Image (cartoon, rainbow, N blue to C red):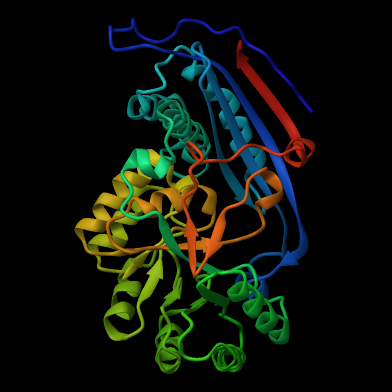
Amino acid sequence: MVTTSHTATHAAQQAGEATFDRVSWIRVSSVVLPLATPISDAKVLTGRQKPMTEVAFLFVELATEEGHQGIGFSYSKRAGGPGQFAHAQEIAPTLLGEDPSDIGKIWTKLVWAGASVGRSGLSTQAVAAFDIALWDLKAKRAGLPLAKLLGAHRDTVRCYNTSGGFLHTPTEQVLENATASLASGIGGIKIKVGQPDGKEDLRRLTAVREHLGDEVPLMVDANQQWDRPTAQRMGRAFEEFGLVWIEEPLDAYDAPGHAALAASLDTPVATGEMLASVAEHWELIRHNAADIIQPDAPRIGGITQFLKLATLAEQHHLQLAPHFAMEIHLHLAAAYPQEPWVEHFDWLEPLFNERLQISDGRMRVSARPGLGITLSEQARAWTRAKAEFGAR
C-alpha cells in the first residue's frame, strides 16, 4: 500500500463573501472487491471477455476546514481500476482550497486538469468519484438525504434484481434466486440472454416466465452481443413474454440500429449503461434509439453530469433505469419526474456499514443524510493503495 501526503496550498481563486468553507483534505483509495463466484454474461460465452472475478473501486473521501465530510466512488470491472486511481492522484490537488459548494465549477476544473486524456471514459470516471463526494458532502451539510436535496418526486423507487440471473447460473438456480428476490421485497427480475444459440435463451426465458407467472415484471439483457438481424429476430421471438424491456440488444454505440429496432418492436428497448459521457447519450436520444435510458453516474462523470442527462431524457419523455451502483442511483432515480427503476445488486453490500431497505417491490430512500453510506472495515481491509492530500 502506498500512502502519500501533500500540504494544502491556497490554489483556489480569492474567495468572495459567499464562500464559507474550503476543501482541506482528500483521500483517494483503490479498493478491490472479490466476487464469490466468477460472473459470466453473453460477452463471456461469445469469447469477448473472461469471467469477472472482482470489481475495482475508486473511493474519494473529502473534508473541509469547517469539518464537513463527503464520500464518493467510481468503479471498473475487469480492467481500469489502477488507471482510475492513478488519474485521481494526479488531479486531486486541484480540489484543495476550493469551495465545496461550487460543484459545477470544480467538475470543469478537474476535467481540464486531465483534458489531454479526454472528457469521457477513464478520466471522467475518476472525476466522478470526487463529484459524488461533493454532492454527498453538500447534502450532509444540509442535513438531508441526497434525493431530498435534489428535489425528490418520490420516497421509494421500483427495483429489480439482476445479480441472480447471470448466464453462468443454471436455470434451476435462476428460478430459486428469483423466488428469493421476490420474497425479499424486490419487484422485478432481469435475466441475461445473448447466448450463441438463441434457442437456449428462449428455453431459459420460457422457464423463468412460467415460474414467475405473467404479473411479475421481467426484463432481459443481451449485453451488446447481437448483430442487427439477430436482434430483430430475437426481439420478435421475445414479444410473447411481455417483457418490461430488452436491454443492450446491439453494440452500445449503434444508435441508428437501436432506433430501427425500437421502432419495430412492441417491447421497449433499453440501453446506455456502457456510455461514458452525456454527449454519447445524446446520440441515443437524438436518434430515438431507446425507450428507456440507463445511465451510470460513475461512468458518465458523476452526479453533476447525470443531472444534465436526466433533464435531456425528461424533455424527450424517456423512462429512466440507472445502471448498477444502487447506493447512488436510488437518490437520482427518486428525483426523476417519471416513474423509474433502480437495479438491485447485493455485490457492494460488504463495502458499507448500511443496508438499503426494500419492501413491496420498491427501494426506500432512508432518512440518513447524503448518500447515507459509510465505508466498512472490510472495505478498508480490501484497500490496495491510498493517497492523501492536504491536512485534516
